[in-house]
Structure formats: C-alpha cells, structure tokens
Length: 365
Image 1: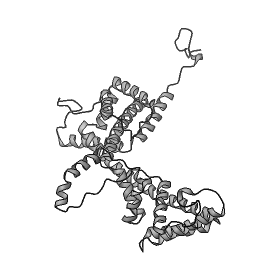
Image 2 (image 1 turned 90 degrees about the vertical axis):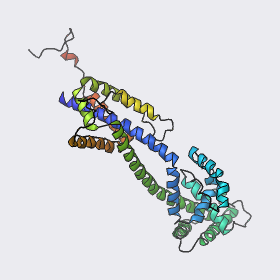
Image 3 (image 1 turned 135 degrees about the horizontal axis):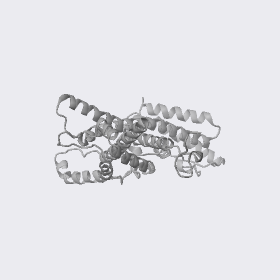
Image 4 (image 1 turned 180 degrees about the vertical axis):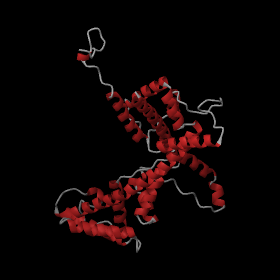
C-alpha cells in the first residue's frame, strides 16, 4: 500500500513537470521566433565555418539557393516599417542603415555546397569548354569524354576560386585540402567533383552539429530562467504538491487518472506553432493541485510568514524549475514508464482463487 501511494505521488509530480516543461518550451519557441535565435545562431555558425569571411558569407546568403529560404516574420516586418519611417532622418544624418534581418533558420548541407560551388566557380571563371557540364547542377554519372573534360575544367575553376580567397584564411586552407583529397581519392574527374561536394557537405554537417549544441545549451538556459519565473509566479512548489498528493486520496486518484490519459496522447512538438499556453495552464489548474498563492491562513499555498518558511518555499520552487529544465520529452517518457509500471503492478485474480459466489476462495483445507 505504501509503495503504491509513493508511486502515485511520483506520477503526479512527473505530470506537473511535464506540463510545465511544455509550457516553458512553448514560450521559449515564441522568444526564439521573435528574436530569430535559430537564424542568428546558424549565421554565427556559418561565419565561424568560413573563418569570419564576411564577404563570402554574404555571397552565400544572397545566393538564390539560400536567399529563397528566408522569410520575414511579424517582428521583422514591424521593424522594417519603423525603419522605413525613419529612412529620411537616417539619410539626412548619414546614419548607416540597420543590418538586414538574419537569413534562413535552417540550411541543408547539399544546398550550402551547391551555393558555395557556384560562388567559387563565379570567382574562378566558369569552364570555357563547350560541354554539357557548365555548372554544379549539371553533374551526372556519365563517363563521356566531353563530360570528363568539362568536369576537369570545373575542378580547375573551383581551384582558382579557392586561390582567390583571402590569404591566411582557414576556410581557404580547408577547401584546398578537401579539393586535393577529392582528386586523390578517385580516378575520374566527374567523380572528383562529386567527392569534393560530399566533403564540403560533411564539413558543413560537422560544424552544424556544434551549432546545434550551442543552440540547445542556450535554449536550456532560457527554459531554466522561464521555469524559475513561472514556478515562482504560480507557486509550483514540489514539496507542497507532494505533501498534498500524499495526504489527499481523492486528489491523488484524479491526478493519476489525468496522467494515464496524458500518457495515451502523442508527445506534443516543442516547436508547434498552435500550442496554446493558456490551454496547458488550464489543464494544470484543473488538476486542483496546491498550486498558486493564497491569502488564507493555514492554507498550504499561503505566503510564508518567516525566514525558514521562505527558504523551504524557494527550495521547493527551485527544485521544480530544475526538473522542468530537463525538458518535456524526458518527462513524457518517464510518465509513460511509470504509468505502465503502475498498471502492470495490478495482478488480476486467478480463476482457481475465486469461488462461484464471487469471493476469493479460503486458504483453509
């Protein structure tokens, strides 16, 4: 009995952590969209990949393959309106125009490689040979003489474009190394072009793995800050909630039922635009847990009246915030495991142990 109560209390806490995590993730997504955090992080990652070569970065971002991925949101459009209103003042005072909004929030390695190919070929001079291979978009698996001749000139053109990059540029050294390696790995010129493109894509993917790590750490810090503020504002105290669940059988039963219902639903996407925070907050309040502040004396939700009470309260809120920062996927998975564990713990009565009258058979001989 005691073990069952403890398990149900844990299930209730996990449900609270899950709902709070989804709420904080949704708010974090709004913040990320308003301040274009993904696009800015990607831009910083590409600048680092290109060794802060601003000119090359701008060429890639202005390339049709990449530029077409950018779409200004509501915040950027409002900023553009404000900028347009102040354009005359800016021109009179010779104030430089503000930096344009960041580019795409996501960029595939293949698209990056093709854009970089086109820029390097434009810089190095396109192949003059009259073959069907005149751009990186025309490469296929043919082995004709014209194809090999065109691919050879393409390699030479790419090499010339790399040579024209600034001296002592780390990106120039990397691209040169990748090009030499691609030519050494294969015995056909068209295969060398493909190998070079694949090497650039892997180089880009490796860098984006690090960028993804940067963004996740930044998002976790924002979610932790949001969790602290929201948990304190709503008085989501782990200690108070656990105590309420342990003492109130009816509350515990209703919360466990809600947890079982939640476990049957799919995991909500953190980046889902239609995610309604007010609806999630309503679900949390509908659980009738000791959440929120109360002015009544003796209420578990009342404001602490002494220093020790505030210390305990802040520790409980901080514990909740730290748990919420682990993320909704973690708590959703744990919630499913605990619900399944509770369900498997209820063993049905055996037919041999039940008498025709419906009661369990006596153990006496």
